[in-house]
Image (cartoon, rainbow, N blue to C red):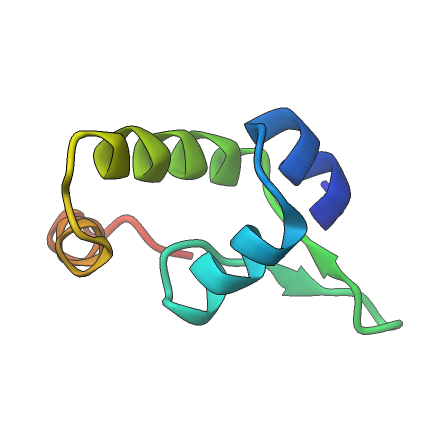
Amino acid sequence: MRIGELADAAGTTAKTLRFYEDQGLIFSRRTSGNQRRYHRAMLRRVAFIRASQAAGIPLAVIGEVFTELGDHE
């Protein structure tokens, strides 16, 4: 998925996705033209991140959960 496609599907912005990626919460691969491409699994991650934030869980804790689960690309 392109960043705009993921943003639309997740109901968020590309800026937010880039922030999550900078924080190591989601991952992309780069095309030969240096464009981000996301696996569809990142949509579930973004949904988890947003639900966790809505429940008041800080991003640092969310990142720790992903690390503990070994859920990374």
